[in-house]
Length: 492
Image (tube, rainbow, N blue to C red; front, side):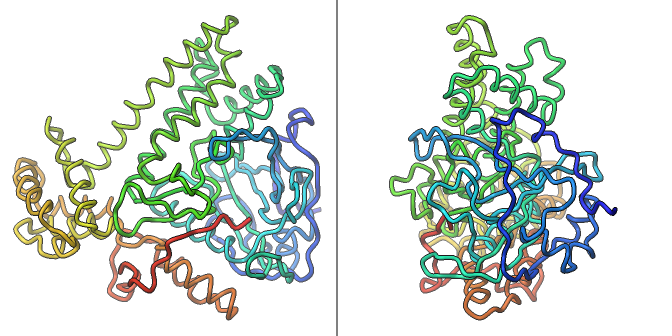
């Protein structure tokens, strides 16, 4: 017998309380929309077989492959600050785990594969629009160098899903280092199941933080490891104007990857208060709130781990608080280091943090496009005397006019020549991002006209976000007022 998926499942070996065994719901007429052949190869999978009718049936959930775990994971979570003791995979089924060519364990999960015991009142399905959005954005994030889940395939089911409006059903095959979340720990901690919390922590250490196993205090090392990865991840988000949109604890990956691309978006005009998510009425997850919300989520994780940090509760709380107090320094260091690189600074001077923050303030005051302001500044680094294209992006250029001479003086103190600085800045300041209006145009073409050409083209453009090409000029342009997409939706 040929095993097309070389599964090596570890999560399914944990106690039965960690998941529910469930098979995907068969679908009417699977049709492959997109297969990520490069990712398939990296996973050690046969792309030609995956693209065959038999492989497509697996990707649609119509057939369970040999050796699959086929489980829905249990977890809880704080949703907009309110604790829900049981959530779980309501429309996702973990097929199993494979070891990729780099020796890294990866989950393969079907999203939109039908009802599970955690579906509550949902149908367990996904619409084509949200599937295309997640495929586009997750792959763009990978190209931008941001830790993220990946998209292996998108498949039409041949059925309709009842949404507003009704749209074609689809399944996304998602790949992740794991699907363990802060909410997974919360599920067991809320039940007072210390043994389960410990078993989960041991599993996470073995899978994601093996060095912690050798530490004097392994569970503290685990907490510190998750804090470090989250601090770095959020800094990376901030550097590309990305807004997750729904940073609930059940959407916070223990592995430090971006997960669950629902009402996410990339900013056009820069404003730290920007919110796109239709369900974030109070701005809890606005762009500028993402660092403190990350710390809030990590605090919920620390609460779960307190019984493992010390036998005495007060001592455990003290240890956790000390670990959490390190988040701010870790985030600020990652944030300012990357921001300095975006501005062409390769050395460190005392006034650099203020110079960096003042550029952000100038962008906000001048309502400049986030992505283009950094990119055009990169282009201008080749000739710092000509900042005309950058200045033109500011509706009110007064703050930029005050800032730009300071920047010129600062980069003049660098050892790099202008050409080298320009290349370095262009390597960290993308020209192409999956802007909201572009994604919406892709979705409308696919859903309304069964036209996947725009989807393929946007994937091509965003796969190389730092290399500007004349034929892709339209993809770098911010939306016109009539094209603006001001709300994004979770798609459930």
